[in-house]
Amino acid sequence: MKTVFTEAHALQSVETEFYRGKWVEAFEIPRRAELVLAAVRQAGLGPVIAPLGFGLAPVQAVHDAAFLRFLETLWDDWVAEVGETPAYPNIWPPRRTRMIPTRRPGAELGRYAVDMSSPILKGTWQAARAAVDCALTGASLIEAGERAAFALCRPPGHHAGRDYFGGYCFLNNAAIAAQWFRDAGAARVAVLDVDYHHGNGTQDIFYDRGDVLTLSIHADPVQEYPYYIGFADETGSGAGQDANLNLPLPWGSDFTAWGAAMDRALATLRAFAPDRLVVSLGVDAFDGDPISRFRLQGADFLEIGRRIGRLGLPTLFVMEGGYAVAAIGDNVVNVLRGFQAP
Image (cartoon, rainbow, N blue to C red):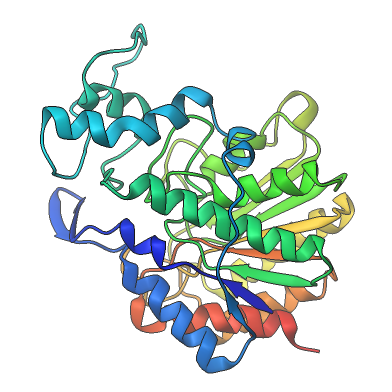
């Protein structure tokens, strides 16, 4: 299995983040990707290659044009007003507000940012675009005949919606790859999100479509980020009715509960019979993750990979979360090794 990776991910790097009322050492750091890369190489999973360039058209096929202009230009506007410091919102619009464009970058940040986890930096746009190119390069490998590929994307993407960002995510790498598969000729595509947190951005992008099935196994949004979205009764709308499956689980869930939810997701996936599968590969369901409350063990990730592998589908793995840095590489490699097991 080829891994697609670029050093451009390090252009998105902050030392601290605002977490539960305090400034703490950042969880989403460049070292995450570096440790996964080292583990992939040590395991001998296959070649590591650099991404190709795909331009902006695949991104525009998923994200709102005004949102993309904002991401591309915000840093220069922010620096002109505030200086070279990480860009955070000054305000969030209250309910029943007229969403008239403003002339202040801090206010425009509040229009598009859903939280304070994801400051925009000088290199944010370049890093996010490079992550997209990793995902699309992996997708192109599959279109060229590979059974699977691993896009070691950073920043992650599954919390980025059509016109918003947050949760460390700016552009939705998995959703962009899924749409690229559709545009390349796949009649049906499925996105399976195994990250601890709900893939709210992916759901937002495909919720009213029946050609892309979205499935997410995650912590109950009553208890956990991103809150407000990811409930079991959210099954799609319009043409997308029954093409969205959320499987929320309570804090403390181990692989017995998680694996049962996965079996349900895979049964739905098989019935949908997609031509291509995109896996949003977060490994923060791990018992030792500092910001998560599931209890999966290292060996459980091998079984996750095995179950996905048994589907027999051309599969693109796209890196999402996982913040237990000492174990992140082993957990990711376990999924990929399990997938490749006979």
